[in-house]
Length: 150
Image 1: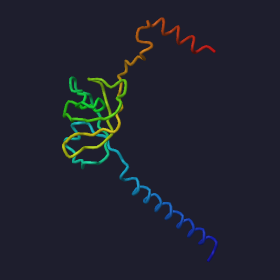
Image 2: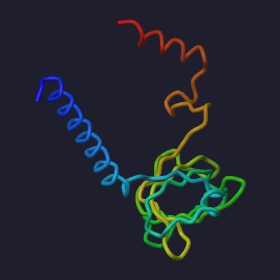
Image 3: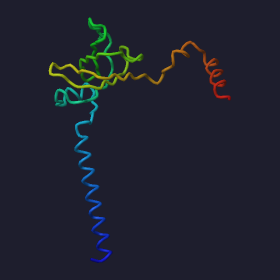
Image 4: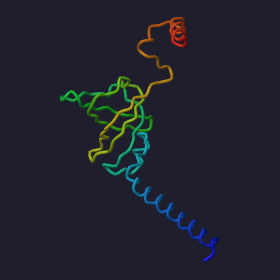
């Protein structure tokens, strides 16, 4: 066999090997994908109970209820097109309040609750750290100027 043909065979084998490795990796990771839904989309989608998904929307005003154990909370996520009841056990983020945006990672249970494993609270574009909430714009510029200078 000529050297030119050997190289062509080796390149073909390498390409087939890379393609096979990519397909194996995609097959192995197919169960790890976490899809993002809004409440309106989740109502229309056929999501199997136990499938890992993310739910994003706004926390409905007046919906946060603490359970007797003191760690579990129930609340409702809405997007204007639908609502989904959510149950979370754990420490909530500091920015998690009624009327704020939230992304919950978890799964639907058979009873229709979204059981969240993790909550990510979102803030609006007007977010100001607690330390700077009572400062005037002149105070903020002064603090920023002293931090910027070595």
